[in-house]
Image (cartoon, rainbow, N blue to C red; front, side, top):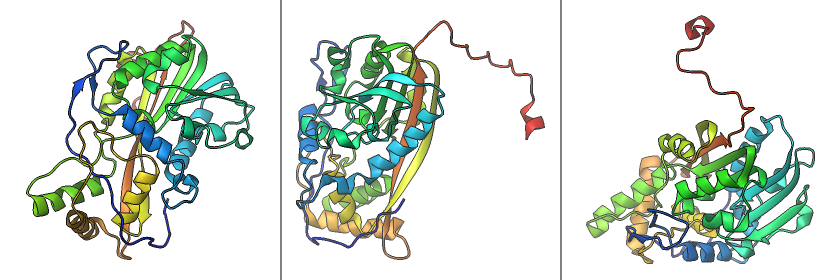
Length: 329
């Protein structure tokens, strides 16, 4: 997927971020968790993303979430089942929910921490009936009753929660028996080009480095987290979406317009202009395309898990296979 557009506004300022200050999480339903992200700051960023900084519609930066929502929808269609209820967890304006068809889902509930983003788009853009709930994704069970949903889907939202294991546990409890949980998250290799360019520029111009991209989950951890949350028949796979930008400035501008600026507690709010200029040059030197554009790689982790039901067929024990894979190959 490629983004082709002219360079606009040569001079821009961007927020940067430093190492997280970690303080204990005081939320009563979370045990042994820490606050890495400022959830209030993230809500404000999402609120601001409803209106594009240049005055145009924020739908101009929907391309990434729309692409991932489409890939996640393909995985939902692989499940040959109709769902009466589906919860879109961290829905935003409904990138995923807009793709749902009436013959697949009876009703969708959209839940997001940003009321402005949640109500950005009218009901007329959805094929299935929509209910919208303004609530914190980290306090899912305060808004959604246990054993009430046949499916829960989250598309590019859970990378901002402080207690990911706790949210997965709540999702499992909110599902009906034999209900399915599906999720797409940014993985740890997301924006590795931007990360290395900024780090090298800081070493050269400021004599040290600080993280400018939020910490993200590694794919190898997700299977363990799903199992810990008591999901059954789990599966995890990894994909990449690579987008082409005219320069690093357009990439940073779109990240901010998406509401994806960093929300780490204790972040820096200013980065020197000459450091950004050096990072832009390093980005092109290390990763640039022959035509002068730059690629930005977004690693996407897809996962699926089922709430236990006695009718589910258990996985076979290791070594129980009767067909030699060498014969198939």
